[in-house]
Image (cartoon, rainbow, N blue to C red):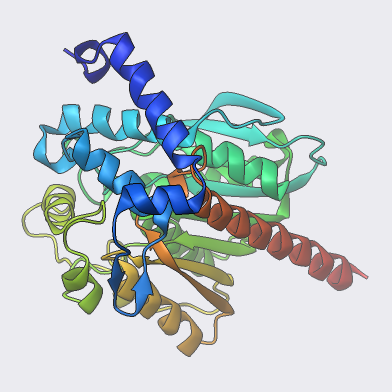
Length: 358
């Protein structure tokens, strides 16, 4: 029995209504419901995010990592739909990218050819699909004016490492070869993703530079970069802020089969030798995220290698805020800022291309 079959239609509608209404309350009212401010490591958790976490506890929503993987996947999708809402988009269509399912989001009045972001979803390499990240992809595309091509790669345990890495690299090669068919300008291609998808975007960018493939930009949203990590942020935020240590342990154990070195640079880009010509990057972290420190360490690694990089920490956010574009205010505003950066970066790539062609 699926999650939606176990939940009655009345309960589903009730949960949607409660979440929308409480997340739309004025901040002072939300503060009364959320409780005392949560301050950790000199940062204060956003009131609406704190309230959302409290609602999850009150409604006793089981964490995905406490469920069998098939049911955990349903739970991830259900919560993504609740928090993502219905986001407008100019046009959307499903298409194959080689052997992989993909979905193309075309913003309203998008030029042809235009910039394109190849997007890899998060979910610890074991959860997530096109539907779990449909809302943020719509939002990102429409806000930035950039086409977004979301790619669904194979998941563990059915297909452990390096399947996801291989799929994402194959997908990017396909995009380079078929850019015209999806309205993309080869001079304005980007890769991006959140969490595990951020890791896959980083490793795809490294491979693209090694192979001499055109790539203008990397968008890395709270990327996992180190399967060996024992950072301060992993200790500070190991429980209570959506992403837990138990989830991360399950993700690594499931994705990396026995005998796989956790510091393999295809799985942990923090250990990669960075090639010349690596695309500039925008690295996003969240203040209350266990992955915060390793994401910021990767940004420093890029900078030390001479790669153009901008690091942005949203200090009041949690891991997963990228999906919260349909309710509340602070997470949606943060994703709006990310969209603006993507728009500006690929507009700059066009100006560089025009200048170089003169």
